[in-house]
Amino acid sequence: MNAIAPQVSSRSVSALPSAEKLDHALRVASPAEIIAAALKTVGREKLALVSSFGTESATLLKVMADVDPAIPVIFLDTGWLFEETLAYRDTLIATLGLKDVRSIKPAEETLSRDDPERDLWFSDPDACCRIRKIEPLTRALKPFNAWLNGRKRFQGSSRADIPVVEDDGARLKFNPFANVSREELEAIFVRAKLPRHPLVESGFLSVGCMPCTSRSAEGEDARAGRWRGRAKTECGIHTKKTS
Image (cartoon, rainbow, N blue to C red; front, side, top):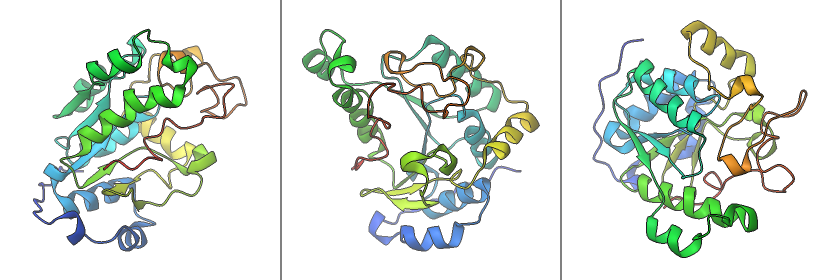
């Protein structure tokens, strides 16, 4: 697919089409069509893709790069990531020709105040995610009217009924891979010859921060290794308003 020229929009968030209207129009669209529609709706300068550069991230980044490799990509460098994830980020940037990847870190003053011993992940993982993910993402998304993410319905739990487009309370949120199956995801990997996350071969099917990520056993859900032994299933960036 040829890159699409950016559409510049000066409209405020309130002047944009509603999430419900867009979701209805795009409910059976392909991931590339959904990304192209998001780009046309708000323009490149007001659209961001948020990626963890995790085990499935290469597929969405590949589709985005085919539409427009200059769409800004926000990567949350929490300070607790595996070195393999940081290396994978750099590999995918080079492989896919991504033009604008922004690595966002938590505020040092917040870490010094709220997590001076770096053990907040153990005593209060929700608070740890708040200062290392939610607050940095909220700051990073302020210039944007819409964002793209890689959630999929087949991941189950709270993601089973996600729409293609939703309103997160502050901006439009596009889920281009909402309808994608595991088989379709694998086909993108194979067809594009995408590199795999280095930890996949070691049994990590979903990779987040080191202290809260473990290997998944055979037959387990891909996200079973996240916050194992706790009721927590999401970091919060998909359940909190990102105003």
